[in-house]
Image (cartoon, rainbow, N blue to C red; front, top):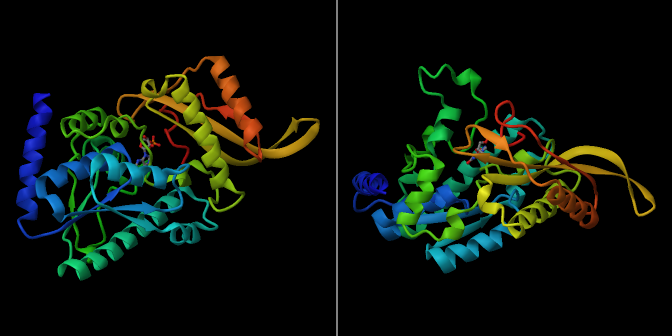
Length: 329
Ligand code: XMP
């Protein structure tokens, strides 16, 4: 794709110009398409002066940390520091139920961690990193900070995506956002040009605030994280086994803090309901719910109720965007 080849060369030159020959850059990797492609691009421009960090915030999917770290090492050959911040995030989220507050808290904690990471690097390198790479895409920019003339203003912001909106003044890190003008499909193509393994490029998007926006209410209560991880893993594996993963833009489970009555074996149960969501989309800005065969949904539902303790009901989300958003929070 000649246009993306141009974008690539242009971005490499811009980054080289911005960073110069001496300065250092940090990048938070999430294991997703955007941050991986952004990091690979910046690595091409400035090599070992890029320092990547992967944060386990306790809001990741089943075995995500182990899986992502192993792949970075074996397939991408990008050196990555893993920070265990599970307690740090979860203690701040305790008792918080408001979706926007959750997002703000998580965004704030990420900033603290980047700050600490910079201090550690400063000790090692003798100088403070000056730049931070973010895999912000064009739709994130539009939804968080609607451009003038779009008919929306800040008071109408739909969700504060934690990775948009800049950094606090005192941090003094300048942002490098090489994907800021691209849509997801373009990022995937750019990743191909950069030889990012297909496994990364094909991954469904995963939001920065992680499972926190897929657990309604307090994420630290009701064994919600553990339950949601198991349900999500069953759903995604079933989708992969059915050969449907690549035809779906994004699929995931949502934990509902409501209990419903069920009957399992010959016993009455009073357990949690979970929702499944799968969508097709071009860019995440609008989406259609995915029409599975009823047989597929029946099998997934049975598997979930049979193997995940504390779940006795599965519902499927049949709303498109709009009127719903993709994530439930
Ligand atoms: P919504 O829920 O806003 O989601 O319709 C649109 C797409 O964006 C993802 N999403 C996020 N991505 N940080 C991210 O990097 C975030 O805070 C965030 N919130 C939502 C969502 O998964 C979907 O693909």
